[in-house]
Image (tube, rainbow, N blue to C red; front, side, top):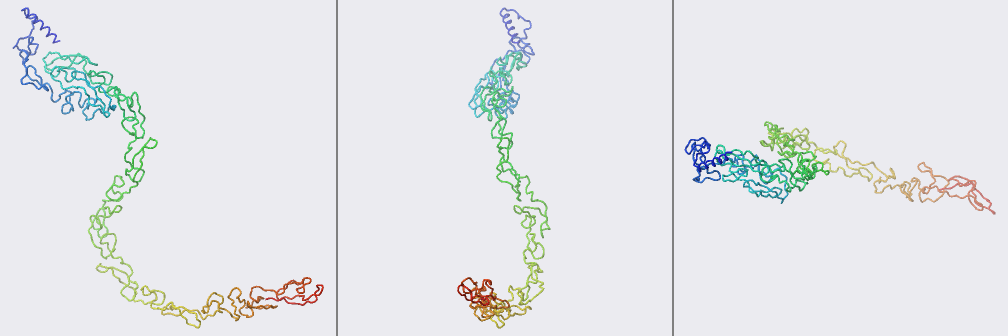
Length: 638
């Protein structure tokens, strides 16, 4: 080693000086002022400056150097810090979120330490949530750094309380805690400096000054990036720091509290999470919970809680995607408005991505009537109607007035609509009011007039018809329908029209008497008495009922008052009858037969003869009950 050679040569020189003898080694180097290429060419105690062996300049630098970026070396201030990359982590300061700490840069690994190590603006992304209030050791015990504690707040580690690395200075200290002291400072070629540490997996080595700067640390094991493997890889005195192994954690979802544990060299997980030693996860269900503890809820059922379109005719998302009762799927429920119909309003009412698709708006069209000379476009005319833009109400409509000319002048789809009587029958300028003409347009189109009346001046006839069309029938015959009497009986007729229509006559039945049509429930002779019939003058009526009925009105001896008995039949209108007293029964006068000791009656062999029949009739008896007189007698009736 160079520093060993220097110690040996120094001892030899001291010995020779003490003895007053020449140097022990002939090759003792050139003296002050001699030419040199490096320090080896100069004698002990001299250095090679500008190819001249010169004594070291131990004088302080004037003015004083900037201790943040410079070092005083051989009496001059030397820039020792690269201001473009202060922490010498290979990332320029403009791209480094903390250029004073070589462990923080966009290429760094994101540890679970409460620090945004990779400069992406997010702290501890990908780390399991810690348990609020739990703590973990953090920091380094290398060089000037000291360990501290970080505390969990809201599931995330807070900043470490430790003293962390700062940019290296030329002060004999390991400021950046990399196991090397003043490694950025200028040096004399051949100088040797101890480096690294024997902490953790590291082994101390040394570095040599080469061309004024310190070379790499050799003959040892330098610190490496910490891994989650149970070792102190970065040799900072802490094992698996940055992974919070052993600290309490809160796994997402239903898994609950666990402890941080390694899950690979660069990964830590919560012991209760998926793949952990106390895995409490389950397959994900649709239930509003994070069953598989991956930080997402119902992620296997996309759309849950979002708006959706149910089973209706439109495409509008007026429902909410919700879990099914068996928690195995999701369905669209509670759609508040369904079957929305597309309206014509420049909006996509039914949410199908097309506006007014049912109405063909913005397509070319030809206007109606007189507007047809100008091409227009189809546009909305209310929520469910369209029109051509050149039609009335359209955006390109030019107003015109309708005239009576058989054309649609105002383009509203109707012809001569301001003249509603056009083409209808009408009554011209004559004496009657009959509509035998029809309305047509006037020559100038200003109005509709009645022309071409085919029949004029019609007179009213007596025929039950309104001949002159004045709304009245036969009004020139005022007695029409009144009562009249043109013969001897008191019965009246009615004034009616002659068949020819030229006048009226009294229409009544011929002379009438009650006898002409008796018992018909009418007052045939118009004397205000119904069925007053008595042809035989016996004061009994053949139309009466009950005790007043005259059963033969042509024989005054036959009526309800008759009391006599008869052995001969009478005839009424050619009909033979025994009912002389009109009681509708042929009463027999003698109805008894001879019985012993009875003095009168028909002999037993006769029975009771019928009306007018003859037989033996006993009139008297002698004692003891012997008939002594009989006669041939006819049965009498009434």
